[in-house]
Image (cartoon, rainbow, N blue to C red; front, side):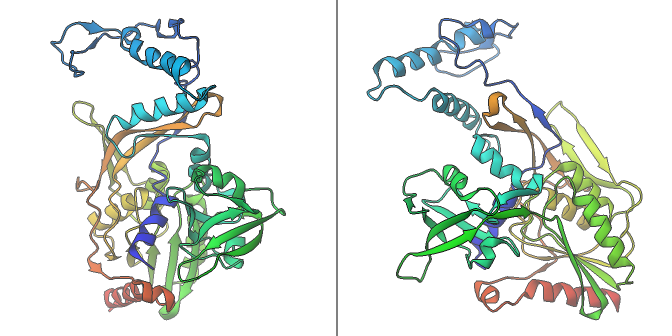
Length: 420
């Protein structure tokens, strides 16, 4: 598979972000009050040092309160409502745009606003089920693009392939429509039919694919026994049920007395921080799993292994690639630093920051805010660097089309060498 596709899978499934909790927020509710009413700023606020060139400084004057600072915002709001040619304007879209622009101004790619549709899709891997066709998708392209059909899903049964573009849905042209809105038309109740008009690379003509939607259950774990009595466990996401599913699979597998274990974190874009600690603890008996660094003068938290791990002694090899991000890198970094087992595959994505997702009122989406960066047990910084495997192995498009997996083959070879 193409490297870009590998990365997109990681982004879609993950870059679901490491988060310690979902919490309620109340940032949005009052933005649509009449502009003359600024009472929502009435709570005590620290004055903001503000200079005439737009910068802030501890020594700058005058110091503006939040109410004063927002006067230009409301002026711009009034100008739009009074002078913009196409009236009435969409106040909800303006509000969402304002939040998005404010978070973008921080310059952090992982701090951003998610509208309700984006928030819904981001939560799909965490919630574990939804009703639709069963495919990871990219909403940022010109057309909604299939990244990968889920195994045994209606999308896979219908023959959808990575890279397929959804040009029309039930005969309606999707040109120029935001991908997050297109998703809503693809999703639907189980048992209902949807017709997707597909553009596929290498095909001269568009073609229709009819799919019957189903309730899609997204498992966290897939496991099986390989040749040479080797156990194989693939961790697909780090959701709320991942640890319980992992322990069940490990228990069943260890009952078969495997000689060693291959843990596959490829294309796992992450999930919950606590789940990463729990998963890491299944393979690491004691010691630090990760550090969470909150920045200068804010301290650092230490997360240690939880007692009772099921696979803390068995020989281990870990598979990673460009789509292994976030919580996957927490586990991989801990296993690497504790010398618990070698990494095989490709350098990981390099998502080493921690986000808190705060759901906004009135179902207006959520903001995700970077609150910390995590470090490996040896206090290595992984953000925008990634983890380099001891045994780098390329996975090409030709390998994918030939149904070959040289990375898994290498992992088996490495594990057998360890056992000698």
